[in-house]
Length: 427
Image (cartoon, rainbow, N blue to C red; front, side, top):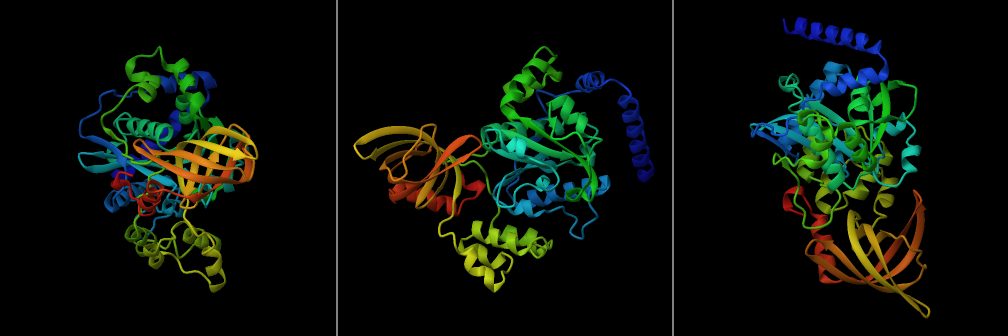
């Protein structure tokens, strides 16, 4: 009976899409927007948070697995979970929606890390990379079957959480997605995603060879686009108010002592459980990805659970002496070069024990030395002796590498905390 009902629903949806497809694009999109129902006061039993326990992540991966299998985007896995190599990276964050303590929805944000993006193998992301700002691929969106007929009671809060997390916590400006052609118009009509290319990719390996459409959204511009499209709408159809102005107490944003831009949650035990014991994700990695994993999880406690390296790769994996951390720290640097002294305000985007990388709007001279005052957190300041050692241009901006020659206790405490950080540690 359940199979017959599911078959009927699929046939009904196909028929509805066929009817809508005959309408002009703007008429279709207007109809989609009329269907919006975003409740400004969700049920108190709803909670939205970063999935940071083994139990929460496992529930997310199981919901995702069942949704992907049902849609034909993957074959059933023995583990009953969809776990990808990208879930092993500290630059990936998985959000979950819980109802009465039970995980009922999930979505993952994959910011560019050592593996790149899943969709870059099929789509040209160079137009997005040419724009200013970080990129994150939105992936692994799924809602438990018991909550798919609730008129967006889980989906809309989950997407609002994703919007707030990306704009306030994840240092992200551009979102990119790869979705089935049947679903792209929801993102275009409601959220104003723009397609990366006109043609559909007929065979997208990351979704079991299903067709896919790539699209992107600039979150800075989206704010004004949402305002123009929705500000005159009724409250439950006003996505501008819902995403930008409304504050939901159901959303539990992570508390951070330092100005981090991501929330890694995987302990060695969790890595071992998901990527070795429950799945063969680590075993199936190629040599390059194994080396990259060793370069980012270089603390001794992670080594027993990482995939083995061939002997000729071991020395290469050990090249990075100090782990680097993605940050967004305001800094004021006073530099002396020859007879000239000047002060520059900049933003540190990455740091390690012995140096940092910062973005500067003013040109700096390689070899210039001086003092830096860095805001590591709301109540954390560090004073350092620094030297400009390199420069590179990216996305039309200037980035400089600094060597730290005399770090203080605050800097050392920060790095030590980051090396063993976990989202539950309020870092």
